[in-house]
Image (cartoon, rainbow over the protein chains, first blue to last red):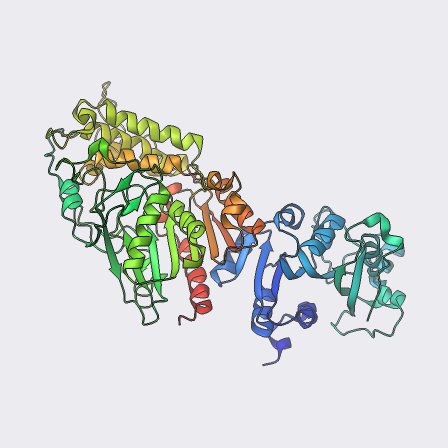
Length: 226
Length: 390
């Protein structure tokens, strides 16, 4: 059975995330939903996985499936975890729904030796077209909420995210951009093309030697190592 | 209420001669208690279900609540009713007796055969009464650990329990982290709240205000403070339910009458129900035991043993935890469970946390609530896989 078959085609990003995780590692999935990624990681990477999920129903479903999950949210509950508690902390398609994305990202890098963050790209051409030509807040297949009921309060583009990573002194070890069909964009393409045609991007990061010192961003530039 | 219940009631008989397995420690200084007292001999009455496997890796200890006992999965010898957690314990149930060796022991200070205030004081030949040393949750767990040693079990696959049983689960995980593979504390707290101590004090005062209590010497003097104990139970029982559950069940309905009687009879169904609860409790529970066990809960404050830090109580714990609370439980509210979860997270322990939506109050942990059953099944099965138990 291929992995793709067990996954919703729209969540092909989970496969790319899974590939970034070292087998046997300790993983925290922040915003783990119904536990699909945790299950995939347990099966494919034999990880010691934990989850945090906002919806209590989602949590209860996860625990009934035997997953280690607590109710909580990325803004409030990451503070409780000690430094380096996990090998990987994953935030999949959730950063844009947090109240303080910068603080959340800093916490991910603090409690995990590596962080994996996937973000929907608000710089995608279809988004730009809707805003510029139609004058309407964009609604796409992936970002399918109207402006008044969206949980996504802090959208960013791929370029924006790289900028934030740079600002807080994070080092980007790997990055992947996916198009609307889940196809992987060439790592050889310049990043502005990712920002135009990538529907989402996935980043593998770790904190730089200057830690979370955001002001020192000029010295600890974010590197992209394809 | 009948105040002529004979002193040799079911509770007293079970206390001295239980329908259970017993384990007796006779050696001097058998049990050093938290108060500084020592207790000897110590008897632990317990029940087991299922079979211990060759590797002794499938033992699951259930800790009972304040008025529970070791009869978790069989007919109760006094009441004749089913085991108190039969929704959980049995073949194919979450605590599967086909797969696990299940142990449930009457707590130290209890009245169903483990050493407690009803037991005979070897120094006097009479029941201990108030000469029994004050028991703590840690003492109960230490006594259970002696039993587990006696059974030749090194590591328990799981320790599970609700309410006071949950306190014992937390104490087990904190005191013996290497001996607890998985822990399931339900509807409990790492410290008893001021409000809960207050309710317990009302119950104790009701017992001690009964003239038949006789300063705790009622067994020797052949009386029984049954009214006091019944009132204590009535007050406590309210705290186990919820406003909406009581209203749904009883409303303002009248009991066997069409109009108010303008008296202090039990006009309302809820009054009649509470009086009944008080009455049947007296038949199976010892008043002094009630004093001691409520005190044990009052004294429980796990963080206090670790310099005020609950994180330190669990730091580096290898145990897998699943913490469960109920939305309508105002005795052990979800905030108490969250405090445990936060501490476990800060200690980098493995923890799941489930809050179950129900209006049935604290007692929900004893009831057939599908989400509780499924949560427990999911947690236990995953832990069993991790433990190599099919």
